Image (cartoon, rainbow, N blue to C red; front, side, top):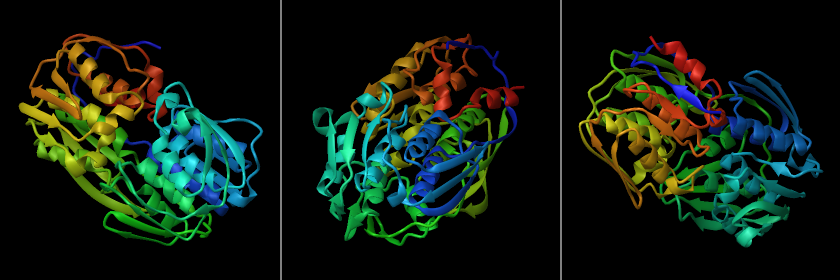
Length: 428
């Protein structure tokens, strides 16, 4: 559904409680389903992506009860799952698709996974290739490069694997398969990616060792149901951090934000650009750091973003590109090839759509270059069905001279169902 965004250059004031982290919400359902016993989840994100994960496990016979942000998972463990009578549909969720491949590869079930049109174009061989080394059996297009993918669960063997890409989804799929594999799996990352899986493994009682970029996990371990508190999603908070920085006369307090060090690259970039942003560390819940972030209108300067910082902010690059249009000087984003295999090719999408609004931005092979500051005007934005492009455009509309129209507001529900409600609540 098209949406016209015309906010007449407001200020932003107020406090927002950021909804649950999408990555942690996915994993809480997955781990609760693998574990034996009852798992209770507090702060679960009821987004389209996370509900797709619930639907998959319900089809596998796991009892899942939803009461708003509180979810109860009752399972007798992975060995008690039933073979589904229907295809497992993962919707638009890359996390659901890739992690389910790892989970189901070592089960005793025959299953078929399929996603929406976007998922059917996203590369899965980065997951299926190492899983095949463990003994997994897949049937799919182009040697299981694309969904739909059928799999026959097999007894797996541990592997020593050096990852060719920095991807938490690939890492997590292998670790979840390793739980059901014989022997010790040793996994080495090229760069450290978000570590929610490692933290949640420990939270559910697993024993693993992490030494710098290498993870050691012995198979045959059983997980036990527990209580999970889901922090607010810093990737969702990022849009309001950006808005608070670039919209005149603004001050926002964002509560309940996950501050996992593998995810806080956006905060580091904001500080490097000169943003007036501060963090109050509150607690550590379910092995995850959590706190409040305050942001105020700031004078920003250009910066260079690359290397090991990229995995810590890969999902935030669209909104960082918008920030850079309002910063003085040149911002260079590099080493971000992973953007090409997200919901869309985010390098091309970000550059094309910000150009429509008047940005001075150029695509490169592995990122983009933005010159600022540049006044932005309105325009018609194609979201490509990508929630983060949609939210980037919505934040841009707060500083454009005329209205911004997005072609599909519904895509934002993938990660932030009440985004526009929250946005309207802080516009003054």
